[in-house]
Each structure stands twice: as structure tokens, then as C-alpha cells.
Image 1: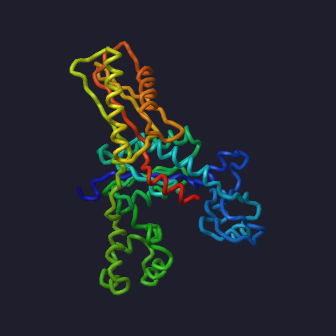
Image 2 (image 1 turned 180 degrees about the vertical axis):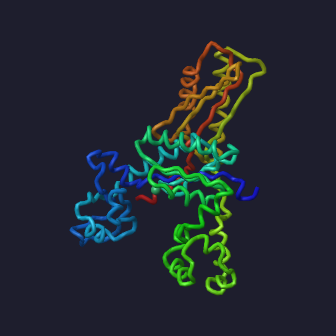
Image 3 (image 1 turned 180 degrees about the horizontal axis):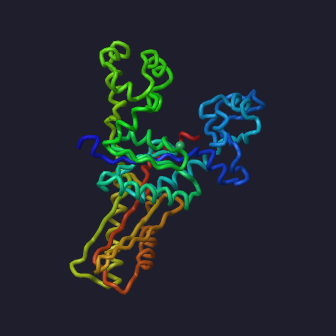
Length: 359
Ligand SMILES: [Mg+2]
């Protein structure tokens, strides 16, 4: 598959740390909020982690020395970061994303790529994006921005295009016109140093970079020039590193004959549960979300999910939850198919490693 045949969605939370703080303390809403180091009357050390959009109007941005932020906006609300709150919120947002597709990749605490190629059209992908944004707003009272494009690179630039709370769709034939007028600095990986060198050659926009004489670029930047020019054309060669393997595990059974026999349904569910637990043990995984799916004789399909507070690999817990989800789904109609899925999986080793990181 060539790159421009994919449909990639990039989701990026808006001023994430600051937005979480404002959500927890609505009195901060509308005020310039700066999450970062202690400013100590402009003499503090350290940098800004995140600035709310109100604070950005004063020129405050991530990575700026906190002392500078205090000087340009002393009346801003300065807050020390609460990483536990951000990681918990992030986990719930990634959970919402995982409900939407198995082909997704978290790239930072507040960003993820989703591969939407299976939807076939940008209209469909746009509808899914709006639904996703709606769910996040409803459940987390936070906004995000989304870009949809044929490559990860263009999707990422697109999600930044109408921030905050924006959706930008760039179809394959629009990539060139979309990128051309943007400053080269919008390309991730082209920092201030390269940007200045490009500017010395008279290159300011991505379009100018894409069309610039490659020999001159090679002489100046070596092989990086070829890569840079590819980026300027929207090509990044990157695939969404699907978490399929760790995203979820599931089993489904279609009955030979549609059935209304509750004990048969329960036994089938038990067998699938045991099989899945064995699978998890083998892969050194634990789960947090259980989903039961039932397709009725008329092909009407219903699912019920429950997410635990902690990770588990206990067969008893799984059977109990699956059984109660099945009862929630009971109907007059006969059942054609029953499915069981475990998601929000984590590798035990990875979890241990992560805990060590924080200690
Ligand atoms: Mg963000």
C-alpha cells in the first residue's frame, strides 16, 4: 500500500496539563494558567510545561523559562504539575480511543495516532473523529484537536492547524496545497537551527523546501536533505504501530443453531474466558476491561463493557463480570453469536518498568 492510500488520524489534547487543572478548579477558567516550575517572583528556575490559551496570548509557551513567563504575565496562575492526575486522565482518554479501534498508537501522554484506513472514506473518518471528540468532551470535560490525512506527518501538522478544539481534514489531493504555505518549522524535526539555515537559503515555507534544488540542499545538509525534502512533500514512511497484539484479545462463538438456552450461553462464555486467561498468562498480560458481545437471530448486535479499577488476570473475576454483562444483555430473542473481549491490556514487565521510572 502506498502511503497516500492510508487514512491516519492524529489526536492531540488541547493544552493538556493546564486544561486538567482548570477542569479540577473551574475558578481558573478564562484566566491565564501556567503549569510548570515555581516562578518565585521571576527568579525561579525551570520551565513552563503547559500554558493555557489565555496565557499563550501573552507569548507564554511550553519550554519557556518560568522566570520569563512570570515577567511577561505576573498575574497568571502558576501551578506546579500534578502528574498523577495527568496520567490517570490520559489512561482514560486512551481507553476511549481503544474503544474506537484496535489500530492505534499512543505517542505521548496526550497524543495518539489511529489508523482509519478500513473506513475507506475521509467523510467516515471525519464522522468517527467528531464522535471521538464528543465522547472525550462528555466523559472528561476536555477538548482535543484532530487532524486526518494520508500520512502521520500530515495528520500531526493538521491537528495543530485549528487548535484548540479543531478538526482538520487533508485529503490526498490536498496535501500539497495544505503544506505549501506553512513555515518549515511546522515539520517535526526541523528545529530552530535547521530553520535558520534554510532561511539563509531563502527557504521559509514547506512548499519552497519541497521544490528547492536538491543538489544545493545535499551540499549543505548531506543525506538529511533527501529526508527533509520527503517530509516537505508530506511523506514520512511511518505506519501506525498498531497495538493490535496488546490492544485486546477476544474470542467469538457462532452457534450451529440460534439458541435461547441460558446455560449454554453461560458455559460458552466460561470456556472462552478460560481460554483468554490462558492466553494472557502466556503473553504476560493483564486486563482491565471486559466486553461481552451478543448477536441475536435478526443480526442485531449489542455489547456491554465494564472497566475495573485495577488490572487483573483472575479467572474468577472475569467469569463474574462476564456473567453479569451477559445478564444485562438478556433478551427475548435467540442468540446467534456470543463474543468476549479483554482490552486495556498491559504487559506485566512494562508496568513494573513504568513504576520503577516514577520511584
Ligand atoms: Mg497536546
